[in-house]
Image (tube, rainbow, N blue to C red; front, side):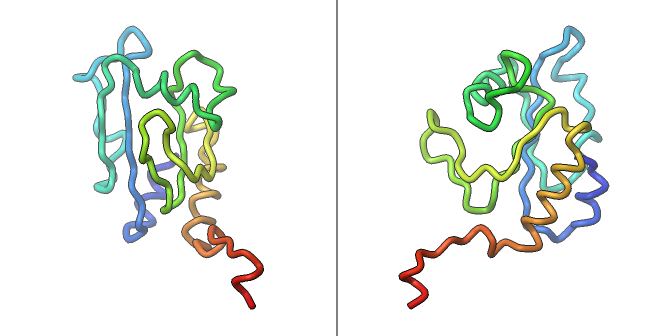
Length: 130
């Protein structure tokens, strides 16, 4: 995602979790550039064994990711997403994609739509309208 977009939305109620893992031979914790995700709402993690990438490979939103480990990817989840059970993973996926740069416009559009119309994520049964 273009982090310029995040800078343009400084008061948006969003959370960013950036996870780095050693996929390429030169990847190392001390080589991660913190300026890649400069937003103060970001929480950064180093996953030495790429457990998160292996886990997300088993999630429906990443089932067709090209590698055995999901990396250079994003998942966008709405504010009601929960991760109550580790084995089940997060709920309420809005969109996902890879690479982050290649799919940046899709992520941008989905994020702006979610922020502009959060009510669209609420579904009431017809009986509730009576």
